[in-house]
Image (cartoon, rainbow, N blue to C red; front, side, top):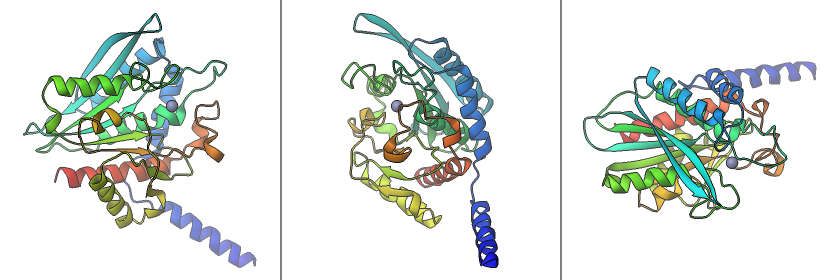
Length: 290
Ligand SMILES: [Zn+2]
């Protein structure tokens, strides 16, 4: 019995070590911690501004060009300031792939210690890490860090998805919607207990491609095609006809009980989840821009 236990422990450990990924999971965790150190990235907060500036500085280090798009919107008699961080890796053609993450923290009264490690923090960290691994090629890549994903009261035309709706409108005004060949949104990807059920409201061929790549890596157990639709930052692009998907693990803790609570802390995240989702995203990108 003792021998059996020993063998299973060794087997378990070797499995853990066998993740083949270019993504540095520990660095991703450190990038989440950095955001937590700024404080909750609440609407109109100094921490939100500092985070946007930090994202811009990190992106520049990876050789991407960066614009911070700052604007205001009036909601319920209050003027709110938002900032999207728009990062571009230029290509030879006008075509581009769009990657997205929101970085804002939802303001929840009575929960001052809600740090949103996974909800905003994890995807922002992974997108920054991904940028250091994406090579230049014919097709450009844009990584946009959206502000104002979270609603103040209820999702509506002027509450929630502020950053993604703003950027989608900018694509329309610039007449560049057709050049956006695909959009991959990352959200809540760091959970130790990783399972991404890709929301139903997304592009089927892109979902098929992702599932194919997941299975090729023997990661089929971490991904499935979900049956529920999710209102998230990919929706404004879906509405424009852009092939878009949302990689979200919307099962965070028992019964999703860590979501939007003070339980959404860094100890709930695993470097391995970043490695899996990140490597998969890199491989899908390679298929989209060979
Ligand atoms: Zn949220």
